[in-house]
Amino acid sequence: MADLILRGGSVVDGTDRAAFDADVAVDGDRILAVGDLSGMSAQREIDATGLTVSPGFIDTHAHSDGVLLRDSVHAHGLVQGVTTEFITQDGLSYALLSEENLDSYGRYIAGLYGPPPVGLDMSTMAAFRSHYEGKGCNVAVQAPHGPVRLESVGFEDVPLEGEGLARAERMVAEAMEQGATGFSTGLSYYPNSYSNTDELVALNRVVARYDGVYVTHIRNHNDDRAPDGTGIVEAMNIGRRSGVKVHISHYRTFPSNAGDIASIMSEVDRAKTDGVDVTLECYPYAAAATVPGYFLRGECHVGGIDRLLERLGDPAWHDRLVDSLENLFPGRNDAATFTWIGAEHLKHLEGLSFADAAARMGLSVSDLTLMVMRESGLQCGFRDGMPTSPSVARQVEADVIALLSRDDYMVGSDGIPFDEGIPHPRAYGTFPRIVGRLRRRTGVSLEHLVRGMTSLPAGRFGLTDRGNVAEGKYADLVVFDTETVIDTADFNDPRTPPAGIPYVIVNGQLAVDEGRPTGALAGRSVP
Image 1 (cartoon, rainbow, N blue to C red):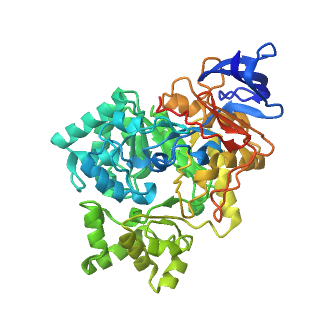
Image 2: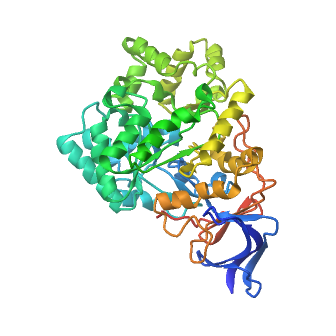
Image 3: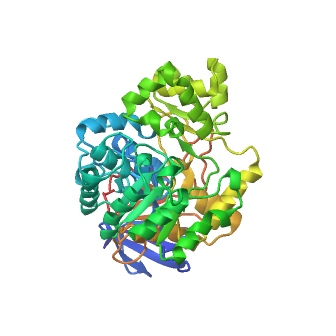
């Protein structure tokens, strides 16, 4: 007798194979059988007639490092059908930090993750991964560049070379040996952006020895550190020089270049002809989200959070700080909206555009931004405004579906979930938005989209026995209605759950039952 049988569903198995009707039996944490199982019984049977059964969705880019430590169930991901999340993205995380650096760097990245954890050992990848066992979903990790650099040469704008580089290489190697799937960086964040191409090549040669993946938010700060070409050019050059597999984070068109897929993909396709092994990911919204410190030049960040907070309150630094915001944040700041502010006396600014908040406080937009950063201790985040023309937003969404129609694209929500505030809805609606409204709008193949959400990332990042509905695989499964599945989270009400996903199974346990989270904590640190 099986533990669970899903009866009569249309199976989309994750391989791009055409959907087929079959029963799916689960025993323990594995799929026992797929096919006509009319002669088999189970402790629980679910009628999946008229529904699709697929592998659980894999979110290749999530900023859940903090919230998973505070909310083990992680319902907002589960109700989307997400059974595995990749954290430690953009080189920003708690992993590999000593106790001293965990406090200071944890406060520095609090705009993304909330207050830093207290009393947890994060000093090795094994220790870090242990804190993500027994969550609602599976959790996979990479070695994050920021902590590697911080532990090697401090929060300083200095080259990583000599003994500093040797220490960093040892840290990356140890992290790979302890279960990291690769190495991540965000070259618009600090101390990551103090690096140069040579440093990144050296570290990725280590990653390549372990058959890992270089995951990068490409450079758009300190372009002089990449003399042979910045941005996507640098990422491809790192692949050429190190031999590492490359994965590009949240790479899509924006309102400024909507419809021009050819230009953003030309360098990628050129590198592929040179033998570089490249995959990419994107999310289906025309607005991004991050923290205001993203738009302060590297000189402002030297020394870490305490020095940055000093500069934010130092009149001698004021003009340099404003110049940085106005040059690195052009045309975006007035319409941007505060998603979360950790200071109680500034909570009334959450959900206001920067322009409206500035008017309310009697400040310029730049001075308002600096004030909120200073008085919240960097515990603040924002999202961009959506395009004023709906046709531009729809073009960006059409571009996302066109990119996902390629064989090398996956889905990463880039979600920044928070316990409070008005966060970006991508953390709450990315996957049903793609398989629901955007698939129906464009008519793209369901089987191909599911492959990009399941077997493609599982294979790319070495998630053993996941991403496929087949006998012997782990029972990470999602059951959804292709006609009704849809995201309901929007920019005004971002936390509303999707519709049309009645069942989600993680390692054989029902995590969502008739649309409601069960509280099961069956997730594991994978692979």
